[in-house]
Length: 311
Image (cartoon, rainbow, N blue to C red; front, side, top):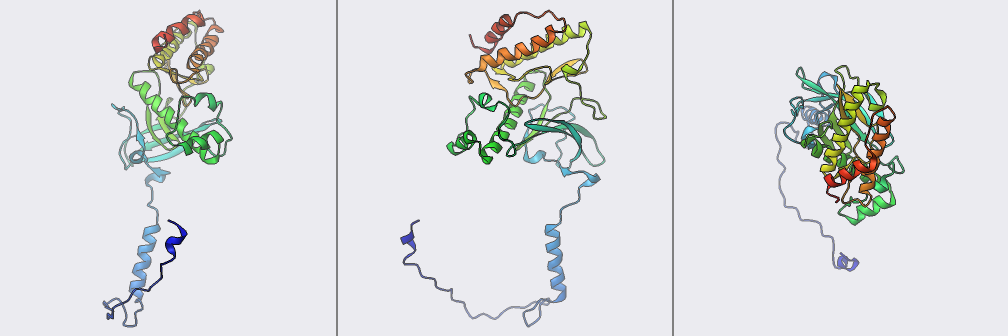
């Protein structure tokens, strides 16, 4: 619309027909509200602004209905009822890009489950840890969004945070479906990802691989599990991208991969094979430093290249 489009417009007040006002029993003939009517409207206004009380002193109602939901078949412990409530129990971990909180989702007077709530930060951080290399191969559909990401505007950093959350949630769902050792991804809502909590019922998280002191026999078994996990990812065309003994949990003797926001598509990302080799190198170094006989990095990466379809 242009400026000259308004030149011939003239404001004309609408004509009103002569109608007699109608009154009911709750209004006076002078047009003023009665005290009863005024009180009724005040109650309606208060009710409209009042927040419903959350049962059991919880912090919020379940966000399941408005979130992207995890893959089927879902574990029995996943609470999908909209009447469920979430209670914050504390912080499990703080990091550069995200914090992980412990929450309990339960039905009032019913069953519940502990969850790990991973919440990504956005605008208050200048840049995600080495994000430029990981974001290769990921593209937004809108050029405006791509410019915001490239220029690291406040809007762009928030987009990056949501991209990382979405990438981790999608990768976990894909890997969990094929049986890879990852926590079950319950849901994603914006920059929050709710995950299966790996730990004890009292809220004690499972230790990281770097924290455990296993026997020689356990170390050999854990190394075999690590190779199987990396191979399962490669079969899906993925590399963890930042794998080390610090983002692998040991839960009841089972090795579980965590922290996958930087997951790399080894085909689409020009440095995909390099990320794959680094994952192998980091874990092989940790295990070999504890006396485990590991194959050469070159031989293992060569096998993974075939599994990933890189030739």
